[in-house]
Length: 197
Length: 395
Image 1 (cartoon, rainbow over the protein chains, first blue to last red):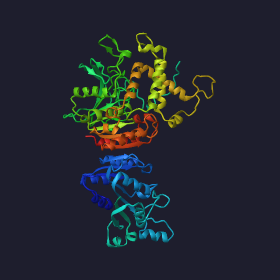
Image 2: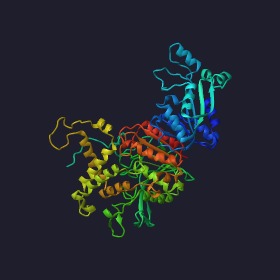
Image 3: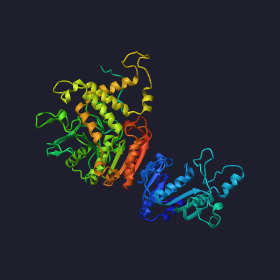
């Protein structure tokens, strides 16, 4: 089974046998991978019924939910990990959702497109919103309403007292190369964070 | 006098076929006939009252495989019957869940052996108020004891043994049928591997009970009701039963869909300045009411609405639904329709929350509504596709 590179990396951060919630789980491929490779007991939350159905077809447990409506249905510390891949920038209140992730989960994992990536900066320097492989849509038809940079995210975590346990940034080939390691906010196209209180 | 309108059943969107038809649609189970099973051992109800025995009328579709592992139990809603799919001899009206049961449909009769019984207490053929009480030699009528959803589960478990089925591949149903599925999953957790609970609720709200009470009052205050002994009196509480059904139909459709279907359209194009039928919606309700009177027994309707009121599987677990759900072993599918106001999506989410708190295997979808509560009976492509996807995992 081939998995997106960011999902492959995340799955290595998750302890086998743990209980995991995937926010915006899409077609359930991460959860299916975690179940098959790491015996993870996972649930996914997803807004798009087509995606929920695809997840169900994979045998993954998916709850049709609007993340913007909140996660009040979940109790404190009911999960070991709460994961959210490529969805932080789409939700109405990313800051509150981070708090929610660490309320219902012991640890959180997020991935998002880094708006500090040099191609984004170049586009903005030219006076345009970027259209890149990581951000393929135009400003008028994108679901992204809260784009941020690696630095922005880390500032928010510091402000909220969220402890960053791991950070990996991937370049456009989904590799963690030396440039991206040295200057993540410039050369990282996708940022992956593992964090806790 | 009730006025017949030009409306078919809200659920009917099947193509009509001529009576005595021989060519059935390729995705239908075709010609079917009910069967009956008698259980002569005494059966103690949840109320403590003992039935000397009972009969279940049921239909089956598809073939039971050699190891008996492909059986699916279908549970019907409040006024449903065992006739869930296919056509009876001489009839062009298919069973109530024809959209979901048949070759290639979500409940695929090429793969599954489907069992669809009529609930006791009803009037579809299984033991109920119309049956003869062996102690008196007369019909039970209003003396038939109140049965509960739990009683249905245990009566159906006897049918299961009778058919040599040791475990259901799945138990599925909508509305009160979905509640029956939930009770199955909690009460006899090792007897089913999958549970589909559609357009249901973990218990009735005060508003739901209030509607039932008005329906019952309409029946009981009809002078022809005769305290339930209307059959001996040669009468029938038609007005009361029709009003009860009219009330039910208001809750089966959403405000939106009723508006779209009828709006404020006038039957004769002008106001009559009287109380005859002016608006199309009045005609529709009167038609539904009068049609129901022909096929349903008033004592059964009273009893079944009480069964609904009493349904509350969490009660015996200290009102803790999650504790009740902790007993469940089946993989669950919960589905609701977003404009259903009888059992709204919120009610299904309560159940989903309890299943999550209990760490059970559950998937949930809130589908885009077409008409409201009755959506679970309809051909709504996304609903059928998703239900089908979940059923593919039933083995």
